[in-house]
Length: 276
Ligand SMILES: Nc1ncnc2c1ncn2[C@@H]1O[C@H](COP(=O)(O)OP(=O)(O)OP(=O)(O)O)[C@@H](O)[C@H]1O
Image (cartoon, rainbow, N blue to C red; front, side):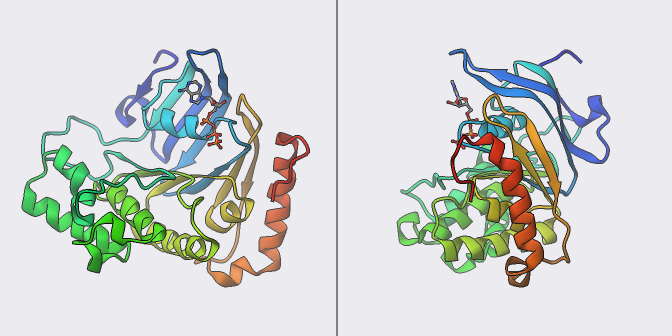
């Protein structure tokens, strides 16, 4: 396969991996070298966090995986469902769900309609789509708010809607770009726990971008620390603890040790700034 191209699991023979990036670089049209070369392999069902200083290319990595942006060089492999998808057919494992920092909901329509949108765009019949949208809302704890409008929801609830919308197509891979950064700490902690519960229940591969050492250690099986721009991998730290994680982990000595370790790995990427 030629460098800079993405391909399906069929061509690449990905088996245990959901995502493989090899020697990936990205230089934007304005000459900004955002990435690389960067190598990253993510196993199916794994939860990893990408952590690094502002502008180091974390969002660029997600956009390349989602095929929203092409790499300048290198090889990108993403496990997808093989074969052609027919209109109305949303295949399990085919797609990628993307959750951004802003919930970006349509203000003029209901929560249900917002979650429904990706299925509508895929041409899924109305009855099926409605049932799936409602199921996605159940999974994020918003069953009672299907008929509400976004303006009636708190920031945390809007983020739950955004998460439901990303999950409604049952994607194999969930890409999350600082989804909880704008939320207060208590809401953020609650959403962290709910996200972990969903991840355990649904078995998705999650690639989570955050600026928070604490959040990355709490959520992830692996914290991947990036250098300053152009982003490369500075450290890849496995977080091993008793599962399922909960508040006991957040207050444990092991958690503090991991936070210190990740923070130390991140320090060279910052010039004199605090990393916690
Ligand atoms: N479309 C674009 N055109 C030109 N430059 C871009 C574009 N998108 C991103 N960049 C630049 O590429 C670099 C990496 O951007 P990116 O958004 O991937 O970083 P990031 O690590 O996600 O940043 P942050 O943590 O602040 O969100 C930055 O210097 C940014 O200004």
